[in-house]
Amino acid sequence: MNFWLFKSEPNTWSWNDQVKKGEVGEHWDGVRNYQASNNMKKMKVGDLGFFYHSVKERRIIGIVKVIKEYYPDHTDKKNIFGMVDLVAVKKLNEFVTLDQIKNTKELLNMPLVKQSRLSVSPVSKAEWEIILKLGKTII
Image 1 (cartoon, rainbow, N blue to C red):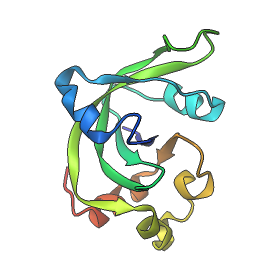
Image 2 (tube, helix red, strand yellow; image 1 turned 180 degrees about the vertical axis):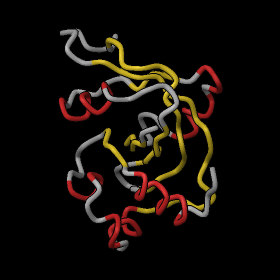
Image 3 (cartoon, rainbow, N blue to C red; image 1 turned 30 degrees about the horizontal axis):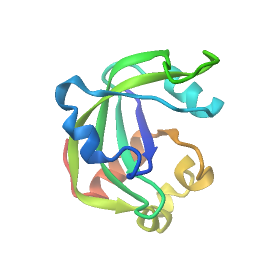
Image 4 (cartoon, helix red, strand yellow; image 1 turned 90 degrees about the vertical axis):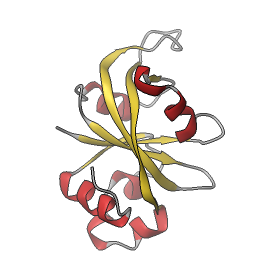
């Protein structure tokens, strides 16, 4: 299993929007960055990811699971990019802020810190465990 981080502007697509989709889930569309798209191509059904509210909030809100692997993005008129489908799994018991991440030595090499504009990025198993601990969440 691999771990990921999905960034979204809460006024565009929020954790609550994701939760409302229930077990049907929702596609993660609109990605137009090649590196983020390549990350999604590596995803497998069952992979887990953090759901991150960007812009003003800058915090990890919850955990999502990949339920459908990479396929063409219907919003891409040029048919270059794809998407995956995600379902909400669990809200973190305590949100983990970007400041907390930046103040945790073991997390300073995360793409979230190093490549702040990347909307979909990998998370190592060690980083995953540290963030779950910071969020006081067991999965």
